Image (cartoon, rainbow, N blue to C red; front, side, top):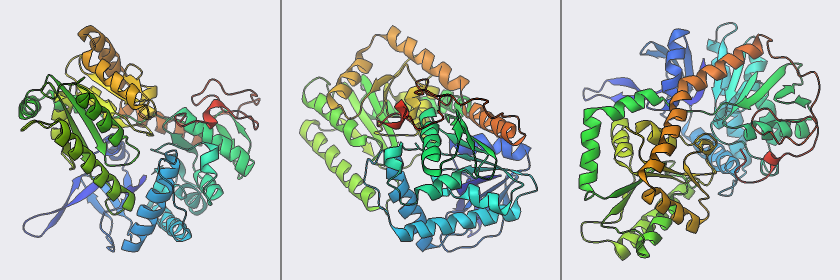
Length: 496
């Protein structure tokens, strides 16, 4: 069973008034669908409409169990605690988190509803995989209701270092909630390290390497499982004649630029969109990029439009793009094409294929799958990826042109380097990037997590015989220490 904030389907209202359901796009759904089908699985989640109660239903052979949410709960639990408290706190406080008690109360209430619903429908001894930051209390709630279940949890965003996490008034409750799982997964080893350190310091539980001796006597494992994409299917889509034709059409519509830069993000203050637009605008204004020979396309998918910070961000980017285009643009050839809209996978594949340089500049990101999607869509060993070192993907995509998005001058120089590098240099870098993405795809991620969960619940993971005392310099998911000494993962913006 998968338990997630949303069901893996979107409602479709037909012209005749009937309602059908369509599988949602996204890597998580793509990864887990085959596993769910082969194991007679079910998916628990909200179906997307407030103040509506639906019975369980089946779609494409998968049992779906809706959890109802009221409009007020969406405002308090989702927009409030999940996205105005946890999201900024877990992303290095890029924006100030808000701590409101009524939001926490709603978070507890909704998490309990998810746990109750899962406990009602889960078979004896079922494997339950809880997903992401909206449901961090569910593992312990579910453990109390159904101790027979085998519970895994995966956090798709960063897990913060100690000095940030302890700002949260309900810090210990969330740690206990996560420890209800048998296996707690993180994007990178630093996140697991931060969690283990907090469990030791806040809850006074014994930890050795990647293991926790829980208060109820269980051994809980915490380690990294970097998420990925369905690389083969995305590459196949990008390889089609229709995608090739659309990519050519995009370049023609932009005036056949010699170099096409591309940014693709959900509209979010963690993504570093203003920084990359500023860098490109300055390069054009300084004459180092000729707007007759280069163009930037920025896609910003609408996100959380009811949250005030996101409305301000959209307005700021609109003004920024307008100012640059008015200052240095030419009639019919604005240097920046800004698209605030959602597009289907086919259109995104065409954009990836059309782009010469992909710019991914988050100020903080658990992984960032856009970087991997760009690599998967390349048809040859060409193109260049400019990637923030504060994205989790930077740990795997080491042949990208890595940058600090806060350093505008450094970003500008790296964009020029990626644009002007010799073809043989780009080819060598992209060849290695493609190998990494295709060998470590979404199926590899799901299989690694579920295999480890099975080992834990089968008792095949042994408690380390001796604590290891030291500084944790090995990093990754192997170096958590027994004792209070801080490691290099505890400090700094980009460590997990």
